[in-house]
Every structure is written in C-alpha cells, then in structure tokens.
Amino acid sequence: MNKTELIDAIAGDAKITKVDAKKALDAFISSTTKALKKGDRVALVGFGSFGVTKRKARTGRNPQTGKAIQIPAKKVVRFKPGSELTGTIK
Image (cartoon, rainbow, N blue to C red; front, side, top):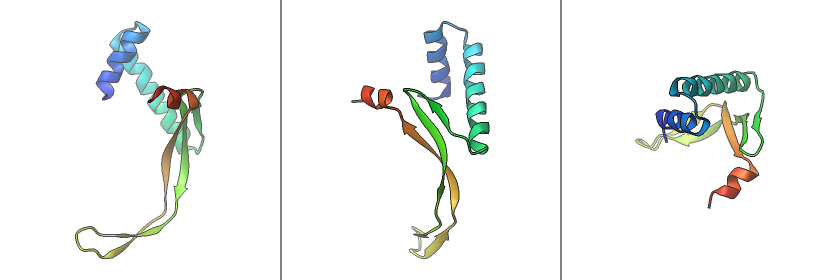
C-alpha cells in the first residue's frame, strides 16, 4: 500500500474527503517526525510504538571489492508492533 492508497482507505473508513484524509496523514507524519527528532517515543496503544535507538559503529565490506570499510555509528528509527497488531497477522 502506498501513500495514495492509504489516503483513499482512510477517507473511505472515516467517511471524510480525500483532502481531509491527506491533511490528517500529513499532520501525523509531521508530528511523529518532530517527536522522534527530539528523542521522544511515539506510542499508539494496540498498534505499536516508534522510537529512536543508537546503532554502534561497525566494520562492513564493500560488496564490489570485498574491501573492509568502517560504518559510522548513527541513530535509527525503530518500530515495535503492539500485541493487537501482531495478533491480527497470521
């Protein structure tokens, strides 16, 4: 499902216009991004939570040459699904 299909689904389920659904989705994405940039965790009960974790520096390999390269440490966004979400996927 891409963003356009998600907007269509939200509009249909909530019985709102596609314009309003797009505004709501964009607001959710913007708010979530801002919270994660501040280091906050975003938890949606039953769905899951988004958080930022640190990934350690490590040594990797260039797939073309096989030469060892150093991959720097960085922060990454993680999603942990909630129990209701994992229970519905079979």
